[in-house]
Length: 314
Ligand SMILES: [Zn+2]
Ligand SMILES: [Zn+2]
Image (tube, rainbow, N blue to C red):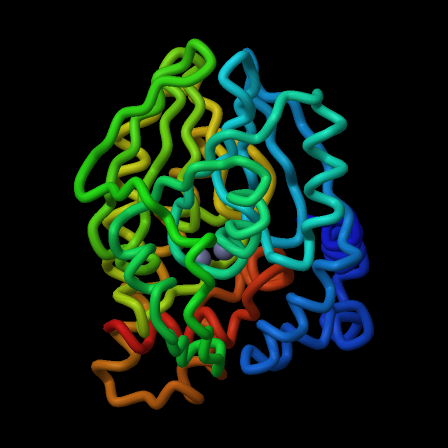
């Protein structure tokens, strides 16, 4: 999350005036349909910050998915590759950690804000590991109805070549990386990456910290799948685990628990309203998640768009 997003949110909270949102929230929040072109444009200049986590692991917090970076003698290993247009700032951020060459890339799932840098990172020297459905989705033109956008097939250099079915273990830089498929969750291509010795878990977009998630029904995601994945994440972590979400600040078990609880509450409330015959518009107007909307609906998804993803799946 950008500093701008944080200060915008703080302003909203401190002002307590909903109308302020109209001049502070980026236009993309008002139109999911325009999200991809706007994200491509904004990511070219968006700031990326580097945060050291534990041992030889850092994270790059930028406009797209959070990138975990493991450094050492085997070269840099990255988890996710940002939006393609963020390349310049990703390169600068990686160099600011150290000059280790880039050797490995893992994609948590196929979305453009996690795989956009695949081609240039591969050309820089990285082998790419991902779930087999990530390769499948990237290999062909793929429509995401929720974003009103069709992604063209990527060039061959951007495709993962080491494919995960259920689980996969990698060793690099004195670290054991355990990769595990979630099953259909946020998409049908989501894997977790666990840095065993450091006890750091990258969840990809099965976890959005203090933000409503996007759920991609076009490629196998659903609210129930997203909740199942949240339960899987909770079962994996202890109070000491550092958790890197797909989006939002790095955190731990408490926020993971809150995320699961918010999703379950949204599903139960929206399912009840839908059963009563309410239309999506009526559910949105009823504001069933009102107490979270000011914080959770400001960064990536509006309350309306999140309710739409929940409504679709109940
Ligand atoms: Zn994402
Ligand atoms: Zn995603």
